[in-house]
Every structure is written in structure tokens, then in C-alpha cells.
Length: 592
Image (cartoon, rainbow, N blue to C red; front, side):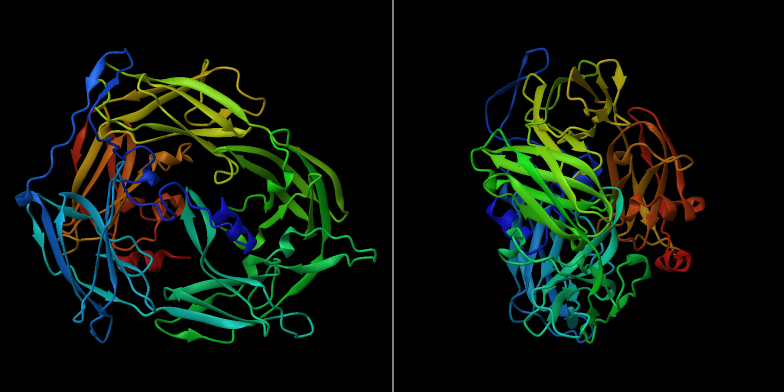
């Protein structure tokens, strides 16, 4: 909670989806394909109450442990990089997973020993350089899966790091005077949880001269915005001025000087260069004050309640337009300098590990908004059970969890519950509204087949809890999932490591379920594997170079649909499909 508050105070709510900001193939981004195994002796119960053994996994014999070696250098010069940190992360992050790390020596070399066999992702970081994954086409791209068989030793896992790019400039007011403590963001468009959003890649705060410096950037094009968001304790303050205050305020402004992101100019950041002179003159616009009160019957300390005003339709990562506020001892809150538009007003309070919240949609015009009342509540309580299709019990040690995610504000409105050994669950503090049903920790070979709330099918279009919960949620799992695997080849019929494989549902109609989009990257041998797939009609693509999350970009996939492999998967199908990679040049030429 303390870290959360500190980030908000800096004008940034740097919230992350489960598992981290960047979703990886086979991880939570697939919603349901990640095995989760809980270790340790003991017994668990099946849905029928029959105990099943939880065998403790025996230690791996020393001769079956793996070793990897490589070297880190500077791209271009080949100069060795010492003191770089190399990290090996399990692809399937089971309970109790731990990363492996090593540092490079004087000659830039590294070695890791005693590694459990499995599938991993390997990356390296170094101050002054951009983080890079093994097998990636460049910084900010997904790398190759590292597939380690028993007793395997891999060498020549080499990295060539790119020096960081830097953007600098000044933030000034309409008179050209410096603005201190302005929040400045360098952002790119990205696909996160199925939504195309502006995602900050770097952040800075202007000093007393108005100067800012954003570092650790991969080379590329950015939209740079400055926001007059108050810093320190100012953002918690409420005005008590006895003088008439202006009806206009500085608003988030994009380089070179516009409040409309559609007309903003892109800033080109070169490899290892400092792009200077990106000066932003803040723009004033008609603004109003928004005031209200939070009623929190669950606390005698209302000052611990956080209120956030977020433009409607903007994802949580688009931080420049977000406004936080704290309530005073009487429960009052205030936002100043709000431009006209549609907003989501959210109040959150945490106590004893529980989250209490309230949310409302707010239309702001050109007149001040007063008298808003947000009543904090525990949200809905959704109870239900998981139904297993067939007689096959879940594998021993399965760690299955259910998440009910608010469709309109997923980062503000997600609630998660543990699925017990008898497969019942109870999810508390579910924010009222329409929620999507998600499952995490599904064992390999299982898929989410159905979700019913009473007589209503809620899997595709969500569960409407606007009026609260009044029934039981039944979730059906099937052990008859399909899978597809194969190799990705280039035009010379050579395997391609680090290629991005995208699986998409039929693109003829807008897909109702984002979790039907899946992705994987090929391993060091060009092999890919996608598991726990629901039966259905799909398109299978292989891209040489694809931005993270872009496998959910329906428009992009449609442009290359003629190069996709058609799949019609039935339950328990195990398909093998060799794929020809779509070259990076083809994506560049098709870009608008």
C-alpha cells in the first residue's frame, strides 16, 4: 500500500496486470494455459470428496541439471560488457518458482549451472543500456523460448546490448517561464489486455529550470506529453482560497503543443543518442472543479481513501490524464483543473487485506460539478463452484484461481478468489458492473468450457452485477483441450528462433472473448507449442518481428490473413502445423 501511494503521488499509477506489465506467451496473457503446481506432501479432495495423492516431486538428479553459457557485448563495437545482470525466468511460473541470475565478468561472459530442465526466458539488463531478451529482434520485442532438456548444456547464448536513448527538453508556461515538477511521459501505442493504449516507456519530472530528462528508452518514435499534475503533498490539497479563481488551467500537453493526441508529433529517439530540444509549452484550457464526498461505513479514518478521476475509454497505463486525490477527515474530495469530458470516478479503500470501492461515470461540462456522493461498499459476493466434465480429476497440486474482472476498468475493478479443494469458491469485493470470468492456473490439457450464472451463459459477454449478485456461478472445465505445435521456417526452409506465433479466432466477426487470442515464441530450434486450447475455428500466424501484445490486433491480422494457416480444432485434437514466417518487411510495408 505504501508503494502504491508513492507512485500515485508522483502522478503515476503504474499498475501492472497479474504477472507483470509485459504479458508473456504461456503466462497470464493467455488466460488459462499456465500450469500451476503446488508442492509438498499431503492430500487434496476432488469435487466428489475423494482424496487424491499429492506426491512431492523428487529432486532432479545432478546429472539431469542443465547449464547455460554466453557473452554480453555492446552492439556495433563488440566491446564486452561486465557487471551486466543475466536473468533466467521460468516460462510457466508455478507456485514457488524462482528466477536464476548471474553477472558477467571482465570479458562479458556468464555461466549458470544447476538449472532444472524446462522452458525459460533469458534476458539481460545493464545500466545505460536497454533490456534485451535472448533471441529478440530488438529491445521491447519478445525473445525466444529457451527449451532445456535433461542434462543439456547450451553455449553461445550471446547478447549485443543497445545503448539507451534519451529525450530531453523543457516545460514552460504561456509566458515561456519554466514549470517545475511537471510530469513528462514518453509513450507508445501498445496492446495490453486486448486494448490498444498509450503505454509510458519512460517518465521524468521537470526541475526548477523546467528541464526534464527521460532515459532508458529503446530507440524509436514516441509521443511526449507534459502534465501539470501536482507533486509531493500538493495533489492531496483542497483549495480554500477566498479569491476568485480562474476558469482555465494548464492541461496535459503533447509535443510540440497540442492537447489532442491525434495531432501530436512523434519524437524520433536514435540508438544511443540524446534527442534534445523537445520543449513543451503548456496550454491552458477551460476547466472546472469537481467536488464530492465519500461515504465509507467501513472505516473511521476516511483520509485513507483514494479517489481517482480517469477519462473514460483511457486505459490505466495512460498516466498523463489521470488525477488522484485524497479525501479529508470529513470524507470530502476535490479535483481542480478538470477539462470537459466523460470520466470514470473511482474510490478505493484497503483494510485488512480487503478492498472496498465505489465507481461512477461522470460527464463534466463547462460548469463546476458539486454534490457527488460515492458510497464505499464491499461490492458483490459471488459464490459458486467449478464443475469438471468427465471423470478425470484435476492433477494433484493444481493451484486454480478465479478472477472477476470489471470490463470497463479492469485494472481498478478486478477481484480474485481461491478455488478450494472441493472446487467451490467465494469471491468477495467484486465491483458492481459487468465482469469477465477468468481462470488462472489451469493445468495443461484443460480449458474453460462454460460459465453460467443461473440460466444465463456469461462466458462470452460477461456477468452483469450492476444490481449485485443474486445467484450461483457455475464454471465448467473440460480436460479435452486441443493443442497445436510445429516449427517456423523462413523462405530458405531454415528454422526461425524468436518468431512470434499468433493464434486468433475466426476474424470474420468481432471476437467476443479476448482469451481466445493466444501467442507463443519459438525456441532456439524454431519450435512452438500452444496448449489448453478450446475447440473452434482459428487462424495461425507466424511473424518474424511483432510488437508485444499485437497478436490481439484484429486489423493487423486481417491484413495478413491470406498467409495464415486455417485450423478447425475439435476436443483433444493434437495438430502439427509447420509455418512459414511472415518477414518483418511485410509488416513494415503494410503499416498505415
